[in-house]
Length: 329
Image (cartoon, rainbow, N blue to C red; front, top):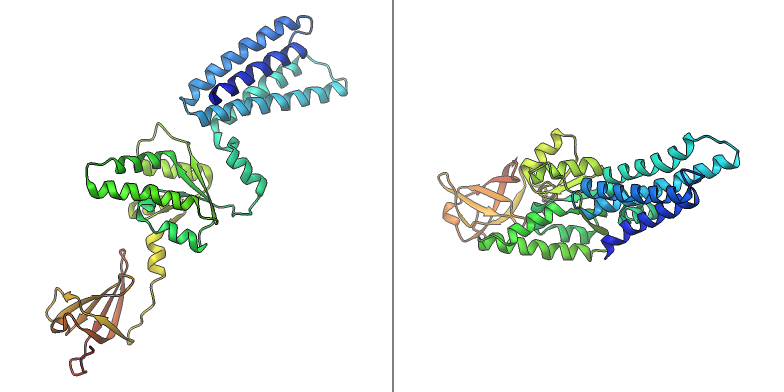
């Protein structure tokens, strides 16, 4: 029903305005029929160009109405100043609506109610647009981060990301299926977060097949940042000059700083690859490789940190257990 409202509105507005403000002043009825014909032709063109996407069709429709309104105001203004020319009715009543339709098709998100609301509210919730990808949704940490208030503003969830998440949820692999369903639960939690405004963006790029490339194009069009945990997407986005908010990098940055020479207590979980090595993990998941600790598996000991290595996957801590020191129970 809603999809028929805007075409009907265009037809009525165009037909009535063509009668009262005719292209042919001597024949208002003919001008009205001509306006009806042009409006139907334009609607068919908009439907064809929008490729069935309601958001694009809505953008073109509203762009047409705004263009017609602006053209009407310009025409009345020139009439007040007694400027008469057959060129101006064609320009203001024909070119302006077509130009508005073109801009509406080109940037349909400009005319979405959520975007207009953001322009009205200003920067009350932050002006930066953040676009989230499938990996960040499935990761599960995004909801906790948003609840702390570190992320605020508008969080855009593209429709093609939702489609990819749906494919993961319908996977024959039980693990993937579980992760996909958890992703939808995370989105529901994000919608309840008071610090952000979640927007489902229906803009798509049919000519682009890869989801990552669609994300890059959407970020470029919206002037936004991409939230992800995908290492490869991170690298490609930097090449294109698009800013990335990598959750893994954030987690690594928040890990406690351990300096060489410090003494820490660790629980030796298993043996290492090298002779007499033991392996432990800190509470944040950081791996600790300890020399002379293989025989201390299953015990909590105090070690001296010898070095800290920063890798792509995160930090690794190397330490040494002093065999002459008493065992820590």
